[in-house]
Amino acid sequence: MIRVSRVTVLAFLIVLSASSIHAHDLSSYRDFQFGMNLSSVAKQAGMKLAEAKMLHQRPAMIQELWWQRSSGESSPLTDPVSEVVFSFYNGDLFRMVVTYDRYRTEGLTDDDMIEAISAKYGIVARPVATIILFSSSQIYNENEKVLALWEDSQYSYDLYRSPNQHTFGILIFSKRLDTLAQAAIVEAIRLDNQEAPQRENEPQEKEKENAENR
Image (cartoon, rainbow, N blue to C red; front, side):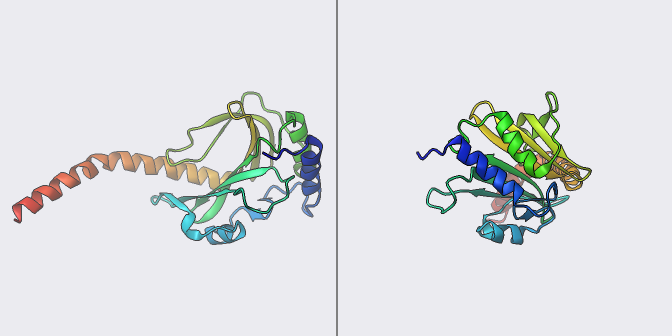
């Protein structure tokens, strides 16, 4: 396992942040802009459109695209990002969950990460016991405490550190689209539960119909 020095990774994060023309602009992460369609995100991430997973189809389409850096992929050894989960509401990007490689960020403190991210996103808040929620097919069912928060009226960036895996991550989302997506997921789950008895009876009814037609 190749380990990168704390100073090298921190320098990479600060340089990457400072290189942005639109400093303190929360509407995008690296080259991914909120509202981008699934096809554009897949192309930008070097993935196939078919790799996207459909989580719900009604009352709105909720899809996810999971990018992971492969061991053979060429990337700067100082780039700490190991995976990104992109979530889409009716085909539009509304949230990203970015996970940093634990070995490439080894030695970095919470303050180190906050300082590096603040170089791009500006004033930071440190909410007490705030819980961030991850997207999934069963609504947002995984919780982490937020270390730091950057936000404006439209977007939010929540930094966390997983106590079990000792990894940093950041949850990034469009407030408007995330609100719509969460409401749609709640309704989708309600409909799934409502229709579950009917789906369970369908095989039995089909078998009975086939038997009568023999």
